[in-house]
Length: 430
Image (cartoon, rainbow, N blue to C red; front, side, top):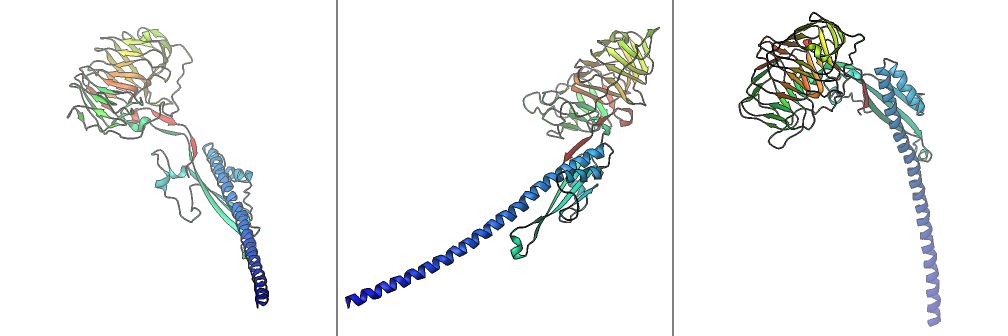
């Protein structure tokens, strides 16, 4: 019996071993099929993903190329299609289809972009935006087994092509201090009352701590304007600033602002005879005493000091201080107005970024100023004139101080002031 039992057990073990080997073979086959499937998915999926990334890069490049062509008044559609073709998306209708649209049309999902989401800058228009859509077809290697011969990608890029734009400086605020971090970069002191009509005050500094914040009012000096917008903080006495300053307001401008700055030139030397000045290169000292300026551009070297009882008159003039500053003392009678036509229409007094000399504005009750006072690197001190006409000006400096005892009236009208040019820009926005 024992021997017979052993034989039976051995036979059973052999049968069980064969059964296990059969199961293992099935598992191995299934594993191989799974590995082949994963390999197929990796290959076909990887190719599709690689193509999508490549197509997105091509769409971005094509949108930028089209935008660049547009700001140069060239064929933007052709430029976009050519750049896509350079990246192997030839718009042949088989491997790829490329569309270039201005303004943007339906996206890959058929939705039309909302202009509000694209146009964030008040100087922008929906017509500045160019859309490139690339639809590509990627052949598969393994997926045809399950009936998938191709994978389809669709990508989109939108670029902004803003041409050069002429616009009021600093969004048309009547008084602007450009310094980005100076405390008391706009300072109201003394006892004078300053009234701004037709626009507001913009303080670009982000200083927001201490007794002297970006906007600082102390003493009996007062300020009223349509608005007072301060990027940083404000220190002031209740009732002395109307309306109260809005802090953490607006978007800080870069410094220097990204403008195409004026570049006046003088090809001849000016002359002075019997108190009459003619346009051209002149020394700052010629602006003293009693003088009348003939219309034109005056390129001024050195400081100009206008003393009490001096009378300076000029219609249609631009005073361009290449170096040196301007000092107008109390009691002087100043009647100056900017050109009304030409490249520098509305620009009255200009100190370039390379000139950080002080500008001190004063005068008597008969003084009048019409046109933009632009000194982006300078401290501007305004001591008032007491004139009811005052400044029909936009006043822009690195910092501004309202000082002294004479009241100041500032009237802003864009048509009487200089409009700056923003350079053309291109960028991918989506």
